Amino acid sequence: SLPYPIPNTQPVSAFLQLFTWEEIKIHNGHGQGQKQWLVIDRKVYDVSKFSRQHPGGSRVISHYAGQDATDAFVAFHVDQVLVSKYLNSLEIGELAPDQPSIEPTKNVSLSL
Image 1 (cartoon, one colour):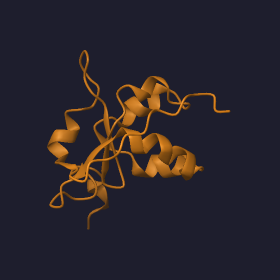
Image 2 (image 1 turned 135 degrees about the vertical axis):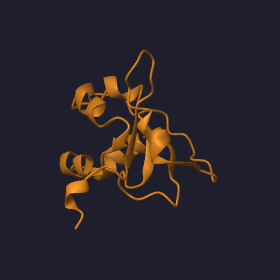
Image 3 (image 1 turned 90 degrees about the vertical axis):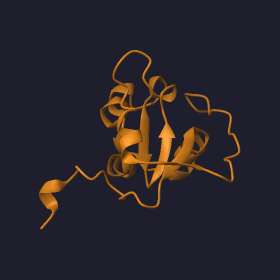
């Protein structure tokens, strides 16, 4: 038995909504009632309600809200099958095809 409930899984629409980094960045949880969105492997998730139930605590989700969390997600979630049951129900769309995989301002120091 899991220490937390698995959210109801909803079928993902055949027509996923596409988002830009500009849209994602404003969903960083700041301000009263603000939504928290994360990007993991180009998929966009609304983790606003789930953050309080997150086994690792809400602070880690708040830290990555409005940005790409792929590296942290892979590093801290060993059981991908279990975690995907949660993620699938939180998915709201994906990055638009013309958007880079990481935020344009992230890892600027790595460019040559």
